[in-house]
Length: 311
Figure 1: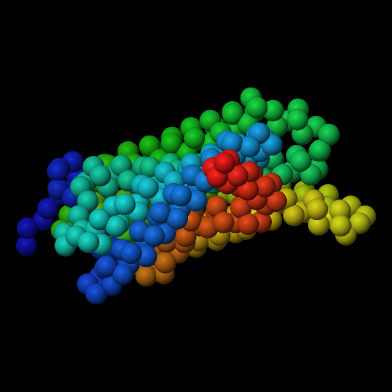
Figure 2: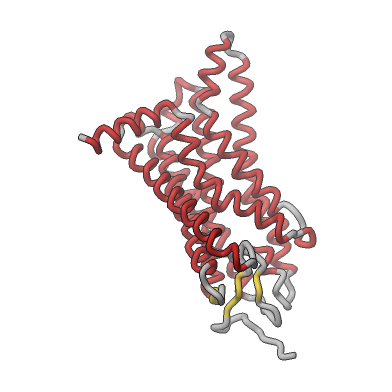
């Protein structure tokens, strides 16, 4: 049998997709197309609402605006190609296209993670140090936190993709996933992947775990502070401002830890595909609903936006 090396050539990969059942392709296309539209429209609406209401020009909503923008970019990197492949017989992706998709997937995903950590820090300062809030969370510091999130995430992605580009891919070139994710692509390589796996085991957890630990520390401090508030109403008022953010954190990190914090040998195609759908498609779609339905300020902002549009 002829052995083909796909590294550095114009040859590409075949994405197995969500399901190989031909009868499910069109129904799945309809479902994910609607989910993608809801994601884009919902997050654009969040951005538009915050931009149009001066009362929402605060650090928390500055980070939420950028989180919504990253969610649009994150899903756009994956879903349109997935939709095209659902209606295509070849379901192919070029070698360069695969690396580009992998790069932006990790860059936008990690930026999401750091933005969630920035929002946790914002809540920590607002609840635990309210009199110093305007000084600590000033516009310059918020902008630096955003730039830091983007720079760290893109450097991490660049290192990952550079290591991936050195690999050779022989014989089978079928990726058992609906996009170019790290684990399923590594399993196709016929060259030494030890450096890639060392990076997955060491550097990747640091990049992912650092913002998570920051969120964990922030909420531990918030809980301690809230428990010291004498009245039940005061406790509820303080912690209710964190409800939306905490819900998004649980959805986002729950599926990420399941997929990535395991050895490559424990990779499961079906289970990981479902878990990956959670944080690549479902969570970005739910974020606008979570922040608009559970947030009084966002509800007021949306009513104001609707009034402006109708007048």
